Length: 321
Image (cartoon, rainbow, N blue to C red; front, side, top):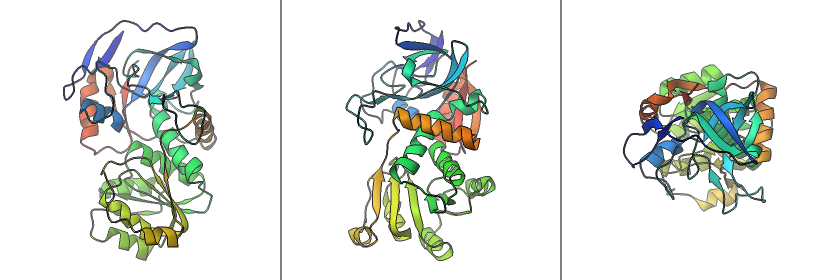
């Protein structure tokens, strides 16, 4: 079979022939039709990820055929027995095990789920990791309720967009931030009620003045801007955090935290049960993941460059079959 392999850090992926995987009785051999990129894949190629093992076939998201049935792949391996947090054996498809940037993949049969019928291959491949992460942080961790006001930072990335779509489908009032006016306009066109460019001076004060406070805030950046979220919280607000692109948080005021009774909730991926609940939610509400662009498998390095530019609005997908 053909696959994209990372053999050296800070070097292009190699599109090459590799041996077909051999599945054990408890594993499925899936013919991959489409795979989606995640920011994780880019960080691995740059050596900015823990426990990198080379060579490796990257890719955590995928959709394909197993026994002539369309399936999507649950991207977590060995979550563990505690739904509150992943266990020590937890890992994500695509490192250290071979991932979805290949024509075939072997994966535990328990990690397969029927593909939502209203999605095509590329849309389905865009769903698993982003959808699962969004579902857990929004519903399992932050316990979003209909009618609540939500702020989602950095709209345009796959998880942020899925979180926005899920929150709107659940009946929330949704607002967003972005460093791009074009992305803000696209989010409003999709149904967001408003937004603000975080590159503007006093963007947080603009939100506070024009909109007021929020019940749920979802962030993946951290950094110096995180402390600006606290004054935007209503009493009893929940802040869900699923990433830390900008690093450590400075200037966090504990006084605001305890006086407003704010909860800060970390979230990573999700359980198999949450994956099933997410797929049911997507099917019931006919949610379609946003696909920014589609590349052929052999164009994987172009797709990675597209991700590195951070200009995408939605998921970047590899069309394999």
